[in-house]
Every structure is written in C-alpha cells, then in structure tokens.
Length: 197
Image (cartoon, rainbow, N blue to C red):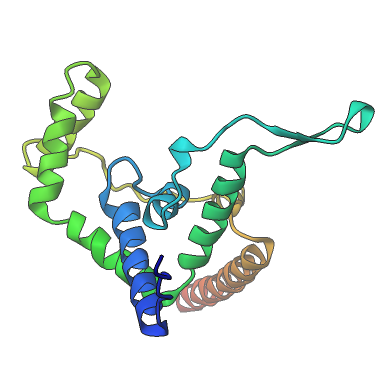
C-alpha cells in the first residue's frame, strides 16, 4: 500500500487561507451561522458538531466519579476559542468587514425588508418592516420635535451614568469650568449694564 504524501508548507498555508476564507464566509454570509463564531469555525475547519455525542463522559468510580464535558462540549470549546483567536487577526477582521459591506447593498437590504414585511405569521415583525419601508420611502414624516431643554445637574448625571467613572470625572470638570466661566461673563455683563444706566 502506498504511503500518503505529507502536505508541503505551501500546501498547508494554502489550506489555512482557504479555511479562513470559509470561516469569514460562514460568519457573514450563511443565515444559519451568521455572527456565530463557534459554528462558523466548526464548519470551516471540518468539525462535525452535529454528529458528536452530547452525553457527558465520566471518570473514576463510586464517590470519586467525576462528570466530564461531552465530546460535543469539548469540540465547541475548541471552536469558540479558535474563532475568537481568528477574529483578532487584522486580515480576518478586514475580510469580515468587506463581506458584511456586501450585505448592505440596497438590493440585499430591500430584499430582507421585503421578507420582514411578508411575515404573515408574525404581525409585529411585519408591522415593523412596513414602518421601516414607509420611513425609507418618505411616506411618513417623523414628527418628533427638536426641543432644547434646560438640564439640571441630576439630568446630566443620569445621562453620563453609563460612562466609566474616569470619563465622567473629565466631563464634570469640563462642565464645572464652563459654567464658572459663563457665570463670570454674565456677572461682568450685568455689572457693565449696571454702570451704564
């Protein structure tokens, strides 16, 4: 029986490039794996996740019996880790962006919007699609008013609450300085008005 020839370094590199491209395609273009790095990696790199046992394995006996992750769980952990690693590689990130931008062409977006509008079984989804269509076509004018409000410090604190403390402190310092400057200018202007009368 003839021995199987080991792939050369260029062949291995070419195979890796093809698998990366498949990964990028699965994570951006496939409706069943879109945005799911674990499944995308599994398909691209030949893990047959749907064929693996989900039954946990056990090690030891009696009171020392230890439950181990299933074959499926172990494979998913590998796929998730490797997908996360791939998604930190600048070339992979760039390729994913290119593929996602291909999805954002008018004809593709219009087709997806049409799918939402035609969701007979899901009235809420259909209604949201119709609203979006009408907004895009200019058939409904957004009547929200642009109202400038006077904010109290409590309002500002509430708005800034999601920011990290360091950033909030920077913004509070800027606001405090700006308010102090404005008060000085207003006081100076009022003083001048008082002298001219």
